[in-house]
Image 1 (cartoon, rainbow, N blue to C red):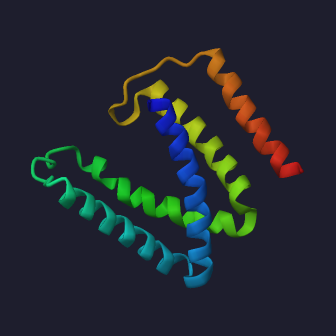
Image 2: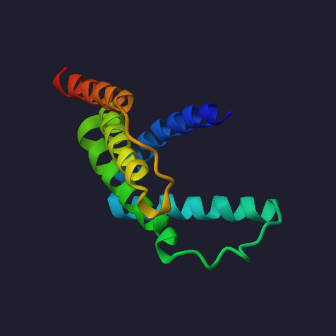
Length: 140
């Protein structure tokens, strides 16, 4: 089930890149980023209301864990800028390369409290394949 959700997340990200890029072209990067995050805020608030779930009991975590929204702003801005110049496919494959390399560092070093997962040569093959795919897309 987790694997299917990860694939679904990839599908949604591809569609999101296209939609966010077009919104950014229409309104500019910064205004589009506000609209994008505002629509996300409204959506999750409605979800919480429908589930009758409150935010109580969610405080008390390290401050940096609450910064995901800030990272989301930079993600949307950088994706919108890249989309305008590269299109969906190349933006996505280069983002994937960045995610794979960063996730290996996070897992290997236990950054931000992540469980340490040792690096092995099999993972290097995966990174090499993603990098090769990105390189091929840049060339062709």
